[in-house]
Amino acid sequence: MSRPVFALPPWLAHALRAQRGPVPWSAVVRGALAAGPLLLSALALGRTSAGVLAALGAMLAGINDRPGSRRASVQRLGAPALAGAGGLLAGTYAGQHTEALLLTLALTALGLLAGAVSAVGPVASGAGTQLLVGAAIGAGMPLPESGWQRALAFLAGAGWLLALRLVLPTPGSTTGDYRFDGERDAVAGVYDAVADLLLATGTPDATARRAALTAALDHAQDALAGPRLRRYASSSAERRLHAQYAAALPLAEAATALAWAGDAVPARAAQGPRRLAAAVRGNTHTGPLPAPTRNAPALRALDDALLHAADTFDRGGDGHGLHARRRTASSVLRTVLGAGGREYGLRVALSFGASAGIAQALHRTHWYGSHTHWYWLPATAVFLVKPDLGPLVSRVLCRAAGTVLGALVFAALAVVVPRPAGLVTIVALCGALIPVATRHFAAQTAVVTVLVLALVMVGGESQASWSRIGETLLACGIVLLVGHLPMPGQRGGTVRARLVRAVDAAHAYLAHVLTREDDRAGRWALRREAYRALAEARLAIDLAAAEHPALARHTEGTDEVAATLERLVDTTTACAVHLDDSGRLTPRHRRRLAELLDELAERRAHAGLGAEDTPRLPLAV
Image (cartoon, rainbow, N blue to C red; front, side, top):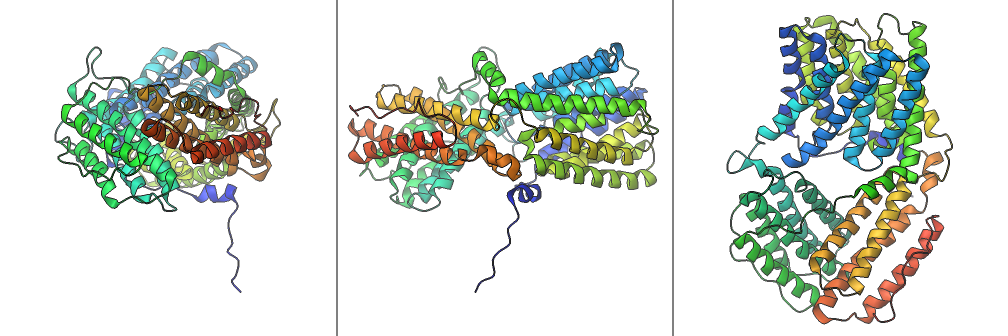
């Protein structure tokens, strides 16, 4: 009799899980050249406090310095930095001109706004985080600079890291036009993902490979979505990359239809996408592409897509109609004011406001001891309350463990390193470690703790490691309490809002296919939107499933809705390819669509999402 295997509960297993991947050496180099040199330059000029703020700006920008294209990094790093500078400005003047109670109320209101906006997406979430961190630092850190000087110093630090991101080439990209190395690698990854899906067709790995293709398309879409390098006319390299991305869309559609059919395809079918991927990476011509057989609608679609891609690679292209669908102001406003934005905003506001109020009260009673900066408690709460950083219990455990480890390490280093040279070296080293440490929240917290403690010591504050541990544990308790408080409306608002958006996108895609509109570019855009919204919903559902059971139960049933929705979008893609080939659906397609629509309505009702708007299959199909 086999012994049962012990399995950790999801909420604990998530805290021990770390991301994997190659070391981002280019980001490591940028981190080493950012905060440390900025601080050293400020010390040489006699502007220590301004250097501390610049290093803080570079550090927070370094947390957002993830793999991707240079153009996408402008928004990913720039928008949060602007928000952080605004928060620093507002926090400074609010702290100088308002009493403690009014300041707490003002910070609470700011938390409500930042939390609601954070529900829009990753960049908005980063902006909300830096807005609140900047406000807490501005209000709680007494510095000689005025508010606008602090904001400029902060922006200078973040701008320096962004400049390094835009100027320095990444390893292996020193030949050719290295400005587009991130975009080129992202587009090539799409063709590789198509080839992987073709090889997995007819095997149990097909579903995972299709999900990987969606992730590759999302990544390429983001990489190409940044600002163009010229205002009125893009370079030929940009136009070529946009056209190559567009040429991958029909290939992805055909590969998905083949995976849906479930019949294995010859390995020869994957050779064409592999050669296209190599051509994108090398910025070369494709040469002859092996043609797949044409004995099925999806195979004929694959062959046609390969011919179109080969022609596109030879001619280049203008890339028109390939841009990602940007969220309109009305859709952003609906997200901010919707269930997810309201729940997110209320929890951030309560956590941030309560932490700021308690920190000021402790400051007045001299609980902090020798140091006078009370910003650590509310700033810690900001990171802890962000659900996109992981499940609640997981991020609380990681934050506590990381802070304790970082404080102990810094306490040991502070005894032996010379000042200020040794502290500057610690800042530079931690800046280099941040891109690697972001793979695990506890590791990131430990590195950031060491870096911030070094900065405040350079700024003139005495040893504060032990106080920081106490404040962090107090922030953990506050966020845990707020995280379990009942809120108006239904819990799991973010998960439900993203799932409803995914349902709406799938319905729009299905309606377009069934009406047989002769607009393939529009169909591919709707297909991208459907899969992207589904991927975002899946991510939110997976995070919610790893919560403590007391919280995870509020999103029960949503995973089944997402699974059914995924099968519906796959089936819709197969229907689109078949309609292009024959103009009519087979009984298998019609039966499968009807079954999935009925199943979707049932699962939505069970999950409490409502099923009144679930479409029915038109009789004419």
